[in-house]
Length: 476
Image 1 (tube, rainbow, N blue to C red):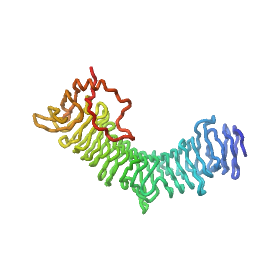
Image 2 (image 1 turned 30 degrees about the horizontal axis):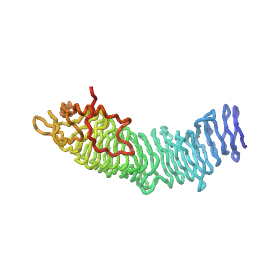
Image 3 (image 1 turned 180 degrees about the vertical axis):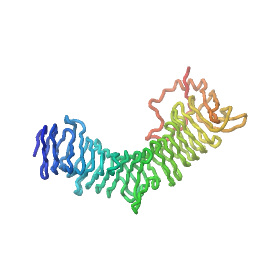
Image 4 (image 1 turned 180 degrees about the horizontal axis):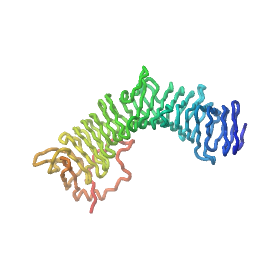
């Protein structure tokens, strides 16, 4: 049947059986039902939801494709597939601008070599119920594939097993579901390196790579959010292996996000040349070398060789062990950076925004240069009582208690006429604050504000050299 316009089914049923084809035009179901019995739609637009509710419904999509829209023929459409249904796309084509809900069915691309099904950037596929298989010769995902079935009793698993699969979009596992990437050729994962695309796992959910190869390098975007979020591969003997047991490198193009208090516990040494984001959990490894960016909040319980940038972005970022290298530390506005052990003199720690706090657990061995310390900021000497802080030659802030020096902090900037105050932090330690001198106040009032400055940016993450400017202050 060739349609030049619209076919609206207001009552009754239209059965599209094996060997039957509708080409072109627009289909609407307004009271009636389309029954899919292994027929073909080719170059057809479905206005309103395309429902394959009948058990064992089968539908083929011809090489001219399928367009799904809202009931009025505009906006994104919807495809609902139910138990034992099967949808198969023939030839190379793109499915886009729609939401596809899969429940215990098969979603197939063409199995002919040389054909490709492209899942467009505006397409979302949801695994809604029961095991589902996505298969075919070659599938390229530019949209979002969600495994989010919470009906555990039905054995939730979304399996992608196309002979070749490429992810240029996002794949997620959430709500207790499991997503298995079992394609024999997964073009994003070669030689132990995962490149391109986004991979997100929520609490108590699993994303598994079916290849018997260890994931050693992350050059993609991996997000693990919440307790029980599992990203795993398999050993050559078929044993599941968690990412913590294999990952050693975050590449320059890579991101690892550990959110919602998700911990990382590994005995392996980690090198970060990309972006490591912490969202409240504890990061522990055999060693940590950073020449990229580490930012967020939580605890880093490993010595750090830092040639990059470490940012306390909000709340508290706690560095429990020694820090060496020539990189930078940064405290954002109202955030807290807690450095419990020593920090080498080749490091620079910068206050970026009013109200930051630098907590020092070993002030005597904190040799890093402190830049940007200004009115509204605080340096907290943990566990050390003090009664004075005096700026001496070379911008050295000498902190004393009863005339005895307990810490010498290296500042960077022009603190002429500034006054440093010392007060108890209420926990046996001492808070140091600063008030700008009159000259510094005048300079600060005349300096134009930098619009939109928020500190770290992915394009230029390295710390700026210290500038000769007075502490931030407001003129009365």
